Amino acid sequence: MTDINKIRNFFSDDRFAMNAGIVIDDAEAECVTCGMDINASHLNAGGGVQGGAIFTLADFTFAVHCNLAHAQGEDVGLTVGQSCSISFLKSVRGKKLIARSTCLSKGRRISVYRIVVTDDLGNNIAEMHGNGFTIQN
Image 1 (cartoon, helix red, strand yellow):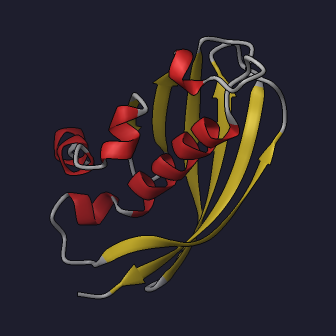
Image 2 (image 1 turned 135 degrees about the vertical axis):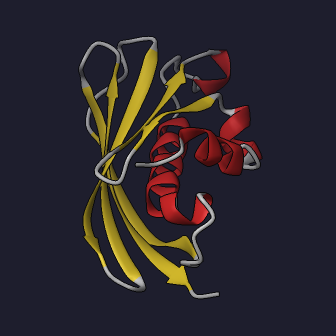
């Protein structure tokens, strides 16, 4: 079982994600969920949600998931993003974005995660696959 307060405290230093309004809703080994209420700062010139805002939510959710143990004080090293691929599937219609991460593979150094972003109306907005590399202490 994870300590959500420790995880939130560790990631509170991620100023970019915090300034974007991202909140860690749930963090367990099987799944991490983060959310972001959409506001004017997330919109592009056409009035839609900017792809960078969607990517930031997916990337942060990936970071939280692959660093759960590290954020709770375990001596497992910090995992950083090695590569990722995101596909934008549909325009956002709702007022909130939700990202859910699942681990596809986790080794000693390399890990792979799938992050699905939906809006609060249930529309699939984007899917990202992230590869993490763990830096040993």
